[in-house]
Length: 58
Image (cartoon, rainbow, N blue to C red; front, side, top):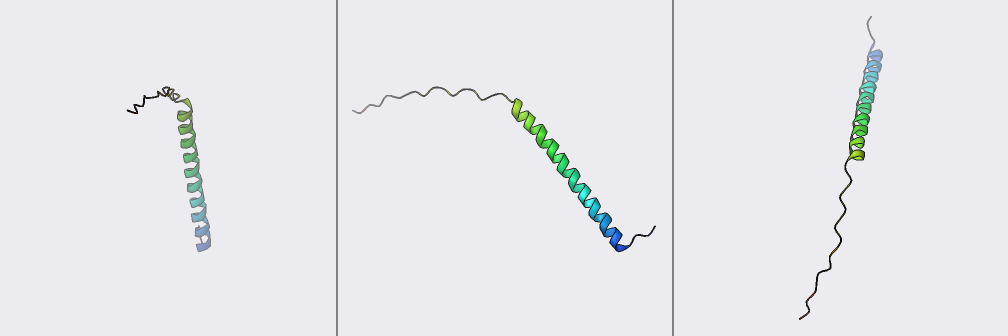
């Protein structure tokens, strides 16, 4: 079957939309995996208590 120019343009646009959707879904899955890693990472260690240094005013 011979495609007209209009049909070719429509087919190209649909292919572009499908590629864009696939990229977006892949990125969404990658972000979800990254978020899981962040959520299960170890909590930060507690900060040491501040120590007041002596101030010699001689």
